[in-house]
Amino acid sequence: MCGRFNQTASGEEVAEAFSLDEVPELAPRYNIAPTQPVAVIGVQPKTGRRGLARLAWGFVPRDALGKERGFINARAETAWQKPSFGEAFALRRCLIPATGFYEWQKLDARRRQPWLIRLVASGPFAFAGLWEPASAVPGATPTCAILTTEPNDVARPIHDRMPVILDPADYPLWLDPAVTTAAEVRPLLRPFPAAAMTAYSVSARVNNPAFDDPACLAPA
Image (cartoon, rainbow, N blue to C red; front, top):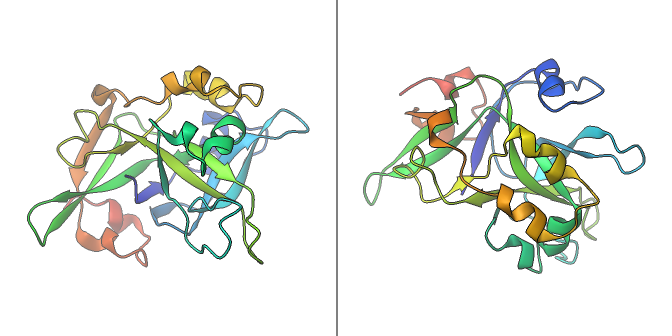
């Protein structure tokens, strides 16, 4: 799964990496937790251009009346055929910018060591995401989830799942609103090449979502 991540790239870096016409205002986030707002990139229906919005992390299906906390992750292997995610998989795919994500390695029955996993190259990358309009619950907001897949050789010693990181060359296909058949985009949902990734252990500071500062990135 992916239960925490960071996004420390500037608005200028994000605009360049994701071909946005406007530079968004983005504050660095070092320890993004479920239910919090996250930056999400999609295609604007009226213009066909990419735009950035802020959605709550935790996908809440519109018919889930009274559900306060949604799905932070969806399994890439099955999301397309699940009632909760099937429509979004066909019609509401998105990119979720990030600069790294955290996973917890189980040491024994009581201890878990957090790790930061990121790309060797600097700059933002994109998780494959799905988004959902606001549910029927009064005051609800649009929500999103991160798709996960099997781990690569970097993530496997730490956890048995990892988020889907898309190759930039695949962004146009993933975001294309004209593509509504799962078979066309499912091949994109694969483990990112391990040679392009790195990982190191960090302190237990990231266990507490109240801490959202550069110290979360410091090696243990």
